[in-house]
Length: 437
Image (tube, rainbow, N blue to C red; front, side, top):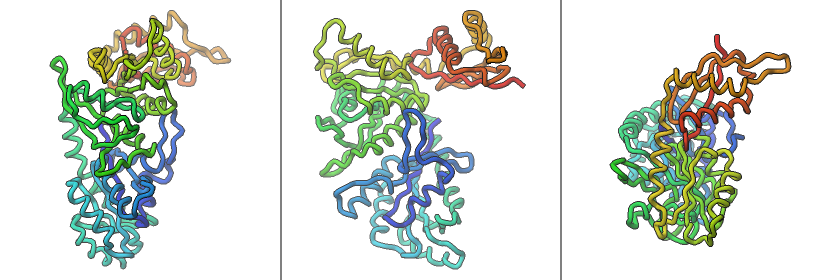
């Protein structure tokens, strides 16, 4: 399900980070120790009135060696590109400043839904301080106190009120949404251009070349696709990309909008640590995955080169053992025709549903071939019944006598048996054990 994104924007020292922490809940960890996923103060999860959403703290976006005004502008523009709804924060104790006006003009031109929060209104008597902020032209200002948590609920009500239109627009899109992710200079934009057979997005040999995010419609064998390029942004006159956490933010946002994620590797350079980090984002998000080794034309090859590279991928990406691999060249378009059949296949796997009767037959056969484990006291795991509860990714609930007896190794065995029986190529599958009442 698509999660909208709220960006927290404003000049320095207006309390963006304090409000950011209030929105996500201070009890939530700012950095999560989830394998393959690292989230810092730039990006976190929030929830309000049963709406789940992402939150961007633009105070964490640093553009070094740029004038003060330019930094503010860049942070606002990053938020505009990535956010569905924007929270603009101003300081109620200082009144309207020229920097506030500067940010407001940028937000007005963006046409993105914007909610204005006047921070540091710590008591009722100070509410008269908010009226000057109408001149920003962003609608009714909401008086809030980040330090005390006052008034934030009304502002969040207004923010999530915009989600209905956003979610309806996304749900109306029935194309297969495909994002191309990978570290800089692996050839993501070149690959999109090769697919489209035109120079739709900017390509450069400079790692991290930035440009506007582009969603491109494409049809292959009567199937509609939306290609999502995650390589970055173009800014007038100068490149501003590449703090690593910002590239991770863009990849994460694209993954959440995707049905299928194409992980692009550079065949010339081999596998790098950042490749594994980016791939981990897609795996943890539960998306269907295809691994592409690009620039294969530039690799000196013999009859074992492809097999050796594939073995390296399987060794380095053990958590993606279900993902198919293809080798191609965006530059020469060699083997380009192998890509979309794989995308279609893994998307079908991702949305596959299995009948409960057939599922339970496979579970019974699997247990007969490899009996369930026992604990030290001789108590054996019993699997009474299994059913599929959702797709994208396929998720199965198994009702058992004791969830503690469902060891990781046996869960892995059952996953492999399900893959073998139902061909879940390219998609993670989740197995949840529940104690039968």
